[in-house]
Image 1: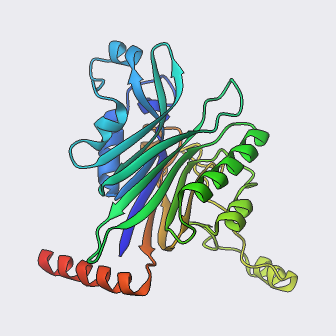
Image 2 (image 1 turned 120 degrees about the vertical axis):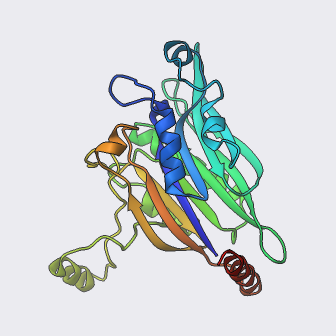
Length: 288
């Protein structure tokens, strides 16, 4: 059973320079991605000034506009200001059984949250629950460490230890200081783990030192020519079939972050996996 997911910081639906409206282009780009589940950051739930300034601005909140009639959506409000508010959102082609926003703000200058959603994926026997956590961590290293601990505590308290997990978003972790902690404490892997090419000499030194292949997330910022490793997708209970960063001039016109798109295979318990595979085969056969 496969699942296509994406994560994207959409910069409140406006261009990185000039604050020109880009929410319509973002909606088209999301449709072209064809993702089953999308993790979004900097989503505006209310946007009075932009609505007054731009006649083409949607009347709906951004998560509702981007979801349209085809997708389910949930929103976690983080930053509140006089003319509106923004936060994280999840879009899903599968029903969202529950949604809860955890406030992990570390100080008065940054409002941050973790949006936890439980998806219900249909299988032949009973729905499969997948726990999704949409995250946007702070700009300061100390804040990110404390917010990562809050994430670990939230996952441990809200998801069964054998439940499939998807944790994705903007970690602002350009030094890659948090991945090892998440791997160790939650048993997750990052979708770009062990997928970056390395030199033969580097691989030889790693084997001599007893270390495995290097593990480094993808570069996603700035979108035109990514240099910094800010965005992540961590998974548990999934095999990674492919992962890529969508970057270049056309993406830079939409947001300052480049989105990550990953194709995953759900590794289910044997009886459920067999039933799900049978159902997937029947569905594919009907389409052909």
